[in-house]
Length: 162
Image: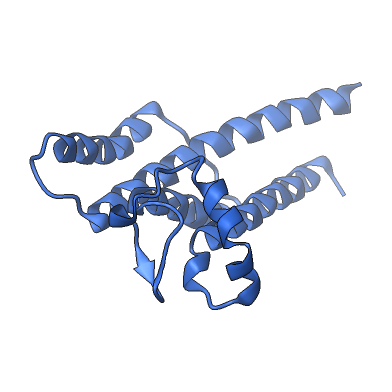
């Protein structure tokens, strides 16, 4: 197997691992909506774990099956954006081209939503918060993935030269 195919396989395996971890994380935050005794038994621990990344305001969270998501609508959007994007980048030959303007453009709606709500210009909307979260989460994930892959790629090249 030549090094190009090996690098593609390693990149795919790394991205698949990231997708699986993201799927587990997302499943945890929607776990109150899943009728499963095991998930219900670990609910207090999940709630505590997700409290480190979100304020968990019940008035700002989605609900289903008489349970509240373990994070707010905005965080749900961010994590859903990460999940969907981590699935999309599994498609072979997707080259990530990162530019700072994308981060600015896709972060602006979320920032504007937070500012406008904080100023009292309109009422909080879970849907708007989730949509702006998806835009932000998708973009930030691509930046993080690109940085990690570039770092790993440099180490892989260094390791092969020794």
